[in-house]
Length: 124
Image (cartoon, rainbow, N blue to C red):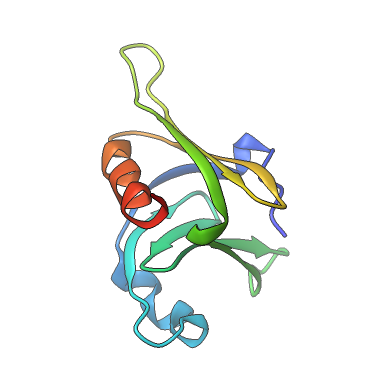
């Protein structure tokens, strides 16, 4: 499982959901769709219609991958922090029952308000 406490793992930028569709299709449940996709240097995070999926690319070749599924139904609380003038990174904190706090850090022009709206639609 990904170490969610290590912030350097998750400096994420926007990605095209279609680029990961073929890779992730075998683990999606019937009717599940990818809404948003973000990619770091090697790792990715997807927001689907049912859960958040973190993809941790492992090893030198990157062929080994860990898929961590975090269902929206297990989120107890969440927080979003927008980017500022000097601090250009935005953050989303999620508190999961049985797991604790998960922090996702976004670089550049990521609209974290839309992520907050997506989370609100599925959690509240």
